[in-house]
Length: 120
Image (cartoon, rainbow, N blue to C red; front, side):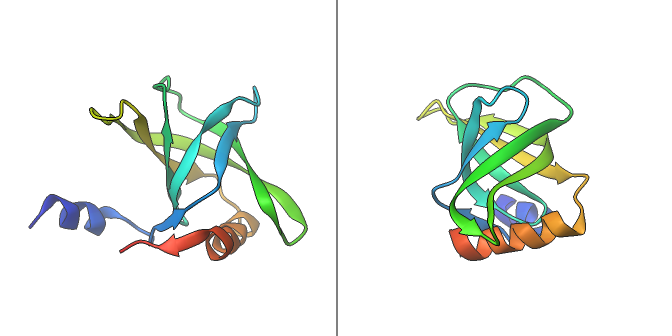
């Protein structure tokens, strides 16, 4: 079995490539990273600098399109893995949503519908 097949078996939710969305920290307002893909359970972000090992991070995703009269999405995430691309030098992070309520899960589906395209 290939490594990608093994990794896909571990995923709970289908991932969707997302364009145009950035993530910001709620506590400082600083840019946290750019979303590469999004699923019901989390997201992949990229950024230029590494992150400190934090157990829980509150984020905001400003939306450049109105979804149900909402212009941003707030959530708590935890870092579940981190890697640095040796060629680009950028850092990739797997973030998992924590403490989600049903409204947040519904809104993530709407964000995927508006901003996402299915990964192959």
